[in-house]
Image (cartoon, rainbow, N blue to C red; front, side):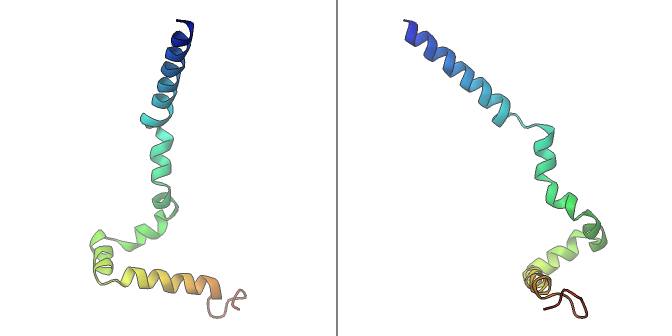
Length: 84
């Protein structure tokens, strides 16, 4: 009887902990989910419209731009002291 009571209490504590930490979203979870957008907010404002991004995505230009950007970041921009 004692073991089943302890097991029941441990189960209740585990469920309570999981509910409090995992299943109920906190405000910081929402901010963390939006962090990539928050970091790039200034650049995203310059884009202007979602239609422009969708057009780039439909024509596979977005992935090409990203590849070129990564390449430039690794090599450095022309005239940059970081250029290798």
